[in-house]
Image 1 (tube, helix red, strand yellow):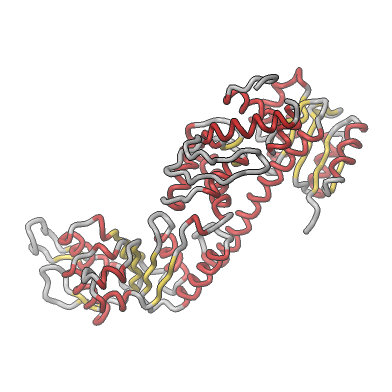
Image 2 (image 1 turned 180 degrees about the horizontal axis):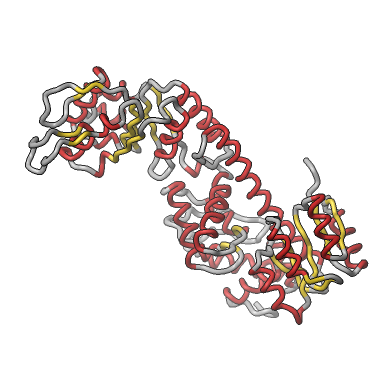
Length: 458
């Protein structure tokens, strides 16, 4: 694995030397530049992973340099060095997309924390980009974000199922896991991709309406049948039809669907002619169909015909760090949608997300991120920005020095305990406390203000 490269842009040789010595100890490859021109040459030649940038340079300003970088589509993180009396410059730099700023004189521990957060952000971004590229090669324009073992197994199954496009497929999984995206991906990879893909939610239509939607009807077949209507099976000839929530269809419709599977033909409602079709049927459900078969609520012969190939989509809680990958992916998307510039999730939010059960799965995670980005401002998504349904109890955290033995503790109380513990351990040295908590000093100050913690007393 190559060492990540940092470009230090500052006209003061002593500062460049000092930062280089400190960062090399952290295994970074460090480049130097003292002018805008030299810095642009370094960027062109080496494309550094991160830039530490001073505002005042001999041939221009840091702001001008950032603008030039944006013109050449350089979007790796930039950390601005800002004197206290030029904080407005830092604000301007942040508006232009700088990742963060550190005030001079530089506190190297604070800078290292900022750098690590920036590097984590770009690593996640690159991992997502890599997964998207790999999946584009494999799955075309459909992106299913995931790098966990269970998702790699799913991707392998999708490829095999798509390659043999004659069998019926039953896709199971909890609500919100992305079953329809999986089905659309199968269709897009199959030889049927140039034909129609038709989808219907069986739970959203009445029995008479769903029969008309699937099989069509003749003119005059019922009161509102003023014209002949082709159904989804007829329109999807040569393609794929997706029946979502298949467990909700009536007994009579089960019989008609079984007939289509057996004879590959059907009659329109009110019609007498047989219509033959070549359609691949993929169904999905979040219900235990085997139990419905045992209870006599779903035909066993239809179940076996639908379940030729079974594809299980795992719930989000079984996907480990995919939760953070997906959260970052949605964060990027909603940053664009709402013109925000959130850089990522705070440490406690990551911990919260990994411990939460996600009953609504990927759909719930997407909604949580959308709400947080829409309603809040700042650099990071903190725990108070998110609203989750049911929080599972958090286990003891030895590093932060708190526990949740009292089931009635709120997350704010836990957070306050952690911040106070870090401050107490460091004799209220905010830089050291921030390092313990793995956040920036500005974030610590924000938390102290939010949690009502005074700077010199508990």
